[in-house]
Image 1 (cartoon, each protein chain N blue to C red):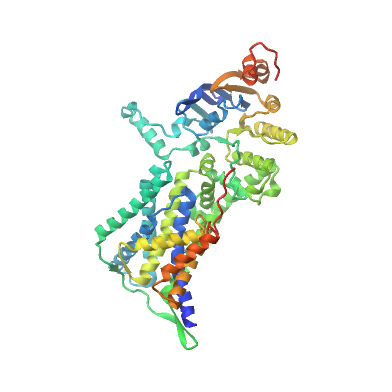
Image 2 (cartoon, chains in turn blue, yellow; image 1 turned 60 degrees about the vertical axis):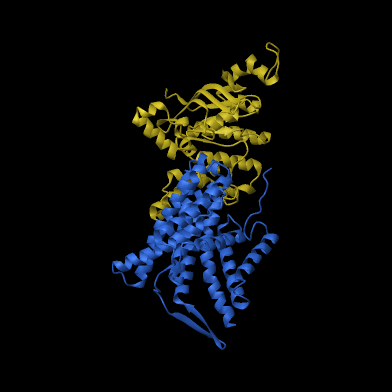
Length: 303
Length: 293
């Protein structure tokens, strides 16, 4: 019983992180119909930026934890957002009107560039940040106990706040309305006076900012990272986006949480070696039953 | 260009590969008029519209739009290729570079021209009122922080936009459907919503591509009335493509007839009705044969 509960908590935190990264995949797919394979590496860059920001802050004598995390969040989100903007401007916009395949290859190239650039500039070895927040809540269940570290509580709080703010932006604000209009009919939106290039840029910035949020939280929790973490995280988040129905924002969040929960539960109850097998089998199963994903809209041919 | 003409199309050419869709099209549209662009199928009417609104980049020619107190060259704001003369004149070079980087069809709309489509292109997954709000974002405070923090200025701007949206819903008689999804509306309602959305961008000239297509006679009559309202009450110039000759002759002040990518006649409804070239183009009749439209 305690193991199930423990794994539920772990799965929820892991899932919210997947969800945050999946948002970037799903928004970009929704608006320009491409899979941004460099997105996982944007997440990786944000992990390095977190370490840099913590080093900078401690260098300037900031000691208290809330200031450090706030500073790290702002610094990382702003710079990662800038990375997202530059990536779109350099690698995708010139290919806006070419075939989808060329943009895809450009994305893979961007991913390799980011990995190698970080490897060259930061070194190939694994790096780490010190544990800043230790301690945990303990709940005794039966003869065992469930332990929820303060860090995990913080991940959940910040991740869900981030998702809530994003949902609000997309549903209620002007920018969100412009995003949705551009997503449904880009040419028409531009004829109504919307600068669609600017909207697409802002989608990339938002997606990267969400990945940065995930990057800060995971880095603070796990501590260790290297230039290759973006690949597996990117694949997992992409899976989450497809699971929830790519192009759908709530779908990405839901898909992330389902993926995280199923992975942790399987790892805790059956075998941690086969957890990826289980989560990908789940993906296959769901796609057999609902090819468009859980919340995705079935593709309808225009007649 | 005189203030009298809102739109001046000169020697417009549009080629798709080897196909010459438009071959030297020239016409002027008077401010505050209702003008019609007619012609047999495949004459190039919609291509003219697409060039006017920046949907296509014209191969050659010039389109000058004189609205919102300034003159805009539609071809220029879409971004032209650099020319040799640019290297002599840095001002021209910088302007071209600016439009190449930031230009696009949104600038045509901001210059005061909006349009509707032959096949309806509403944002089907958004509600009716949202369709109208999204068209107005250019005039409202679009600061993102303002939106998140819900500042006073932002709220005020949103209220204004809503008011305007409901005003136009009233004009096209869709107030009761404000919160329905646009895709759920009937065909006739979607057509009217598209006109309302085009008007929400506050254009000085609105281009309607076959607004009466698929409407029944009473709906067409309501549409005719509405177009008159646009012209008389809102001082909007209307340019329309239409196949319903009864309606065209009824409301147009000025008609341009296209055939095979060329203007074959222009003038008032009465001139057009009796023009032998027009009759020949429509009916394939020999010149001089007795045909009435």
